[in-house]
Amino acid sequence: MHFPAFRATVRRLGLALAFAAVPLWAGAGQAGDAELGRKLYWEGIGADGQPITGVTQGDVKVSGAQFSCVNCHRPSGFGTSEGGNYVPPIIGSVLFEKKTPNRNRMFKDLYQEVQPPGFWARVRAPRMRPAYDDELLARALKDGVDAGGHVFDPIMPRYDLSPQDVANLSAFIKTLSVEIDPGVTDREIHLATIIDPGADPEAADAMIRTLELFFEWMNKDTEGDTRNPTFSPNYRSNFISAYRYWNLHVWRLEGAPETLRAQLEAKYAEQPVFATVSGLVEGPWDEIGAFCDDKRLPCVFPNTELPTPGEGRYGYSIFFNRGLSLEAEALALYLGDQETAPTRVVQLHGAGPQGTRPAEAFTNTMAMALPDTPVETRLYEGADDLRSALAAAKPDTTLVIWPQDVDEAVAVLAANPPAASRFYLPSAAKEPALAAFSPALVEQARLVWPYDEPGSYHPNKYRIRGWMHTRRLEVTHPRIQLQTYYALTMIQFGLMHAINDFYRDYVLEIIEHEAENELNPGTHPELALGPGQRFASKGAFIAQLVPEERVGYRVVSEWIVP
Image 1 (cartoon, rainbow, N blue to C red):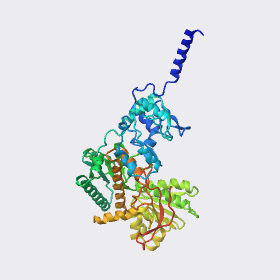
Image 2 (tube, one colour; image 1 turned 180 degrees about the vertical axis):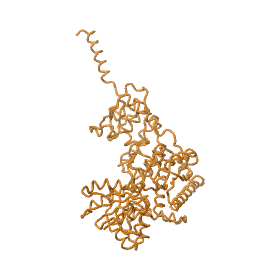
Image 3 (tube, rainbow, N blue to C red; image 1 turned 90 degrees about the vertical axis):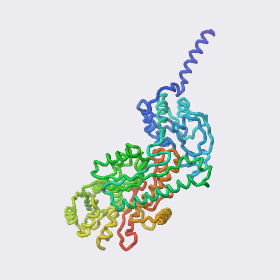
Image 4 (spheres, rainbow, N blue to C red; image 1 turned 45 degrees about the vertical axis):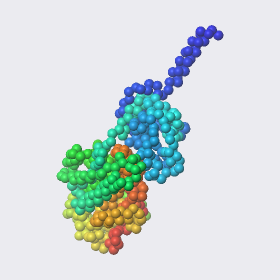
C-alpha cells in the first residue's frame, strides 16, 4: 500500500469519525434563552418548537409533553418524594455548585416522612460530585450520568436535546428559587387573610379569632425555642435561621366586585405577604385568584363556595372543594343513578353567581347522566318571582333550587310549600331550613352535602377541639373554624418542612404532599392533593334533614365523585 495515501485516508476517516461522534454537548457555552428554557422545563418543547423526545426505563419512548421536567422536579425545582422515589433538587444554587451534605434540606426526607428503605438509602447515599456545567448537564440529560459519574435511576428519562436546548434549560434552571420570596424578613413572615364585602360578619370574627390565637401560639413557641437556655445547641445551630415570628394582616375588602383587584394591589404594595391563609369570601374567587396567580402568591384553603372554575393546574389558590359547582354535578349524578329516574326536573336559580354557576353545572351534567330527561330551567329574581315559580311546581316534579340568597329562599319555601314530590337545596340551606321548615317540608327536602357524614372518626378533630377549649375560643361556627385551623396547619407544616428555603412554590408543593396526612379536622371525609391539584375534597353526599338529631342531618347516598 502507498503509505502517504494510506495516511491521508486515515486522516479523512478519523475526521469523519470525529464529526460523527460529536457529543450532544458540543457547542456548550453558547448563550441560553431562559424563556425558551422555561418552555422546555414546563411543556417539553424544544428550541425548534417541537416536543423533545427520549427514553425511560431503558427503552420506553417518551415525549416532552409526557415527561416534562416540571412533573417530577416541580415548579420550584426542589424535586419531590412520591411513591418511594426520590427526586433531588435541581435549582441553580444546588446543581451548579459542588455537592456537599445539607442536613437542613435532607431533614424532611429523612425524619419527617414515612418512606420505604430504598428511599432512605437513596437519600443517605453520599454521592458527592463536582459542580455541573453545561457540558456535564448535557451528558446527564442524554446518558443519565451525573457530574460525578454516577448513573441515574432508570425512571429518569434520557433526552435527545440539541446544544441550544441544553443552554436554554441551563439558563432557566439558574432562575429557579434564586431569591427568597416577598413577605419574609430576618425576623418575621407576613401572612394575610382575605374577607370580602359579602362575608357574614359573625363568621368572619370567629375565623379571625381562630387565626389570632394560632398566631399567638406559634409566636410563643418561637420565643421559647429561640430564647430558652436549655434549647438544644445542635438543633439551634442547624435550624435557628428558619425561625420567624408570624405577622397576621387582615385584608378586609369593600365596595363593588370590580374594585376588589385594586384594593388587593394596594394592600400588597403597602406590605407584601408570603401567602394568604384561610379567608372568608362570599362572592366568586375569580378576581382574587387572578391576583394570587399574577403575584405568585399562595392562597391556602379560603372558605368559599365559588372557587375559581377549573382545576387551574399549578395555580396559586388551593381549595377544600369545587363548591357549588361540585354540589350541582353530584346531584345530577345522583338523580341519574336512581332506579326510578325522575321524569320531570325543574331547576330554579337566582340571578347571581351563587345561582347561575351551579345551575349551569347541573344542566351540563344532567345532559350526560340523564340525556332523555329534559331540565326546565327558570331564573327567578326576588321573593315574589320565587313564590310564583314554586306555585307552578306539579306533584310529579323533581325541583332543584340554587338560591342567590339562601335565607330568603328558605323563608319563601317555608311559607309556600311546593307541590313537587321532592326538592333539593345546596348545603348552605341546612341551618335555616332546620329552623324554618315544617315536619312535612323537612320530609320533602334533601340537601347536597359535600362535607363529612355524622359519626365519622377523625382523631385530629378532637385534638383541635381541645386546643380551642384550652384557649377559651368560643366555637360558634364549627366548620369555618375547623377549616381555618386546617389551613393554618398546612402553612405551619409547609414552612417547617421548607426550613429556611422561603420559596412560595416550594411551600405549596409541600402542602400538596402533606394535605392527606393525619391533619383532617373532620370537616370532610378525606382531604388530599396531588401534584398540580387544587381541590382537596372531590365529592358529596345527598342528605336528609333530621331535626331531632344533634347534627341535624343524615346522609342517604354513597359518596358521589363527579
